[in-house]
Length: 226
Image (cartoon, rainbow, N blue to C red; front, side):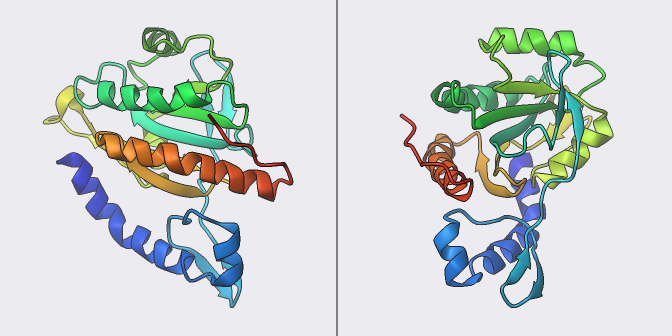
């Protein structure tokens, strides 16, 4: 129910962005297989600026600083959770783990999970969460990050997902089960319902497409991910 409510809120802006992204002309079609999400700024014919995730400063489970600069030039998948979540979080992380296992050794892919309950989810709690998930000591490929609650909620909005306090929700926090796929320039390029295995499969299909696009843009030879 909550997931669909968040989708309804995000739909108008996303639809506008998708329509404009798909009308970018032949050059845009040839260089970008996946759409740019969000409402773009059309400055002039052929000059369209697509929205990017705003600058952020977070800390991961090992206390390392995570910023938009540290993730620059990488593709990352992000989600929002909390360690004591009794509802959708276990399913979300189980689905994301499937994708992580395919890319755990790929230096161009990072997984970023934001806690939306920083009051409880200290760095030791996040380290233990990673350990219980089986991804402890992963070399920074899966970062469980924390910041203030307001920062987490603002970032959730920037990624076209959502989180908010809700006494009626399991654990007291309502949030969507969306994965966001972000490119090397900070553009959100895909959203996936983690509670639907078909959506996880779509992410697994579209991630290598985005990696190929990024490698072409960065002047690297594209290689297939097994």
